[in-house]
Image (tube, rainbow, N blue to C red; front, side, top):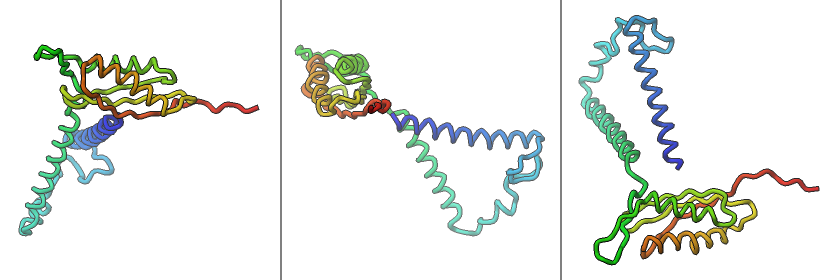
Length: 193
């Protein structure tokens, strides 16, 4: 959950930075007065002067360093893109029907059924589930928000004995491993009289 938020914030900041710099370059190029923080004096000033462009020409380390830095930047951008686009949610689960063919169960349907079954559990105020893994060996990530007076051990035992077991048996799976994160509902302090 947090990873998506961090990605969106970073992407937004990079986008705003590129928009500000690109907009400033465009505005100065069209004749607007440059901002105070601008490196150059006007629309006819070049971005890199001849002296700046040829300054490191004779140094043997310059171009390999520039190319390596740009290649690293491209690799990091590609890694970030694949991390964002990679599916974390399992879309379907292969259910053994006994005839050798099997049937496909929508992952979202199993998630919804598991979350609904868990929400009926005593002391659970909110739940979120996510199905991960492969379609033949799915796994569950669950987030449970517990009421203040609920024992976490009891809530976890009820989840595994009832909701998770029911989901595993109804989908005909041999095993359904789960990672469960428990949290408490925020509540106001009680007055003592």
